[in-house]
Image 1 (cartoon, helix red, strand yellow):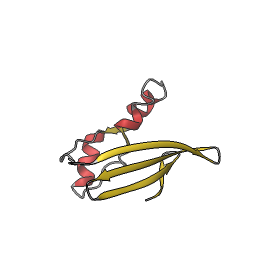
Image 2 (cartoon, rainbow, N blue to C red; image 1 turned 45 degrees about the horizontal axis):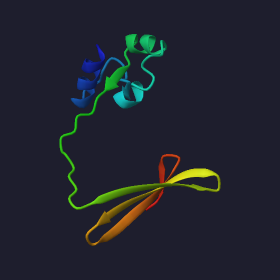
Image 3 (spheres, rainbow, N blue to C red; image 1 turned 120 degrees about the vertical axis):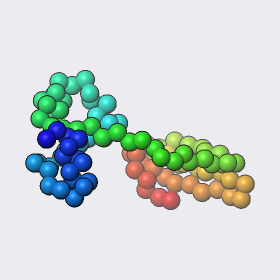
Length: 99
C-alpha cells in the first residue's frame, strides 16, 4: 500500500498494512531541503495538505499587533477593534497566554 491507500483504508474503517504517518505541508516546507527527508518519504511518510472549505470575512474589524518585552521575553498584544468595542490576547513565544 502507498500512503494514499493507507489513509483511504483508515478513513473507510479498514485496517491498513501499517500505520499511515504524515507531516503537515507547512511544517515540512521549512525543512524540505534537508536530505534526511528523502529516506522518510521513500519509507512511506506522507505530506498532508490543507485546503480551506470556507473563507472567514471580518467587516469593520481592525487588527493591531503590539510587540513588547516583559521580563526579557518577547510578547505580542493582539488587539481586535470593532465598532462596539475591542478584545485582545497576549502571545508569548508563539503561544496564546491570555484572552
